[in-house]
Length: 285
Image (cartoon, rainbow, N blue to C red; front, top):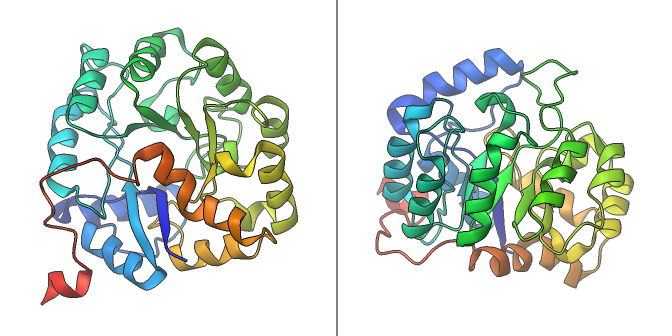
């Protein structure tokens, strides 16, 4: 069954090796791929993934423009990137409007790498503008393997406050709502909606199949999407994990594909640039 992976990462070819090395050193975790768009396409071909969403992270205020240009360059019918804006970028709300105007479906934010608390009032202009223009926001949720365990900048309780303030915001909560914070997920996120989505990246093998399936059913299968966090997790293993949850065929298909297709417009925006639409074998020919 083909899939849409709503949480991946990639870097420009010239930067990928250095970026992966620095992240491996910080997190004490080995990547399973090169971190390039070509490497992502090869992984997709091997795993039966039709569309992937590379999630960019603006770690400095002046990176919004460059990230947006790169996302425009790489997008295709198979690569549907989410650009990013830093909370301290001048006119951050204007950049959110520009991202929407360029035809993207969403943007990515990461409280640790961008140094903000998820429920900070200073984030309201970004959340509010995203809700107004119809952009989904993918937000890192829970702990992060590269940061201290007591770093709670993206704790589920904080996400609940964001939902209270912006109930119309399509919020994609990574790592099943909160990596290593799944008890809080049940308390503050499960059942919230209809615009609160959980995605499965980097979670099922830590949480366990039974607990993951229970959490997914409690929240509602129709608001859970497949994600892997590639190149930090293998896409083929991620697909297998979804298949091992014990869900029926319709539920499995909803998580792997149809939920994301509905939310994101078949997983990617309408675009003219399709240079990366072919398989990695075709790119290498």
